[in-house]
Length: 113
Image (cartoon, rainbow, N blue to C red; front, side, top):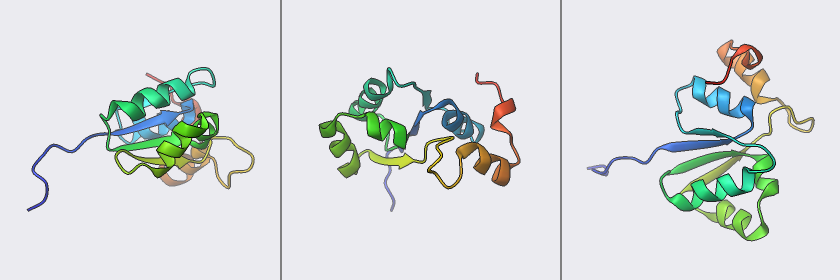
């Protein structure tokens, strides 16, 4: 029989475009950060052990101190997945373009709650 405990939620942490996209699909624990608080907020969420999966932007990955980055990249509980940065020139497709193409939703016209 599969686990009987309650599953831990998923967290998303990143830029506004990334956060809005995941809120649109129903993920409530989506945290918008900027360059100043990205590493601190990631560390709080990562070390809090409240989430089973953390989806974070690659920009956050780059901003993390080396030890925390290594811990996140090798962690399985919580599992951390770094996603493409919205609007980055070296990314094949921005999150906004992906949302527009797949969901038919323009993130530029959505107002954050």
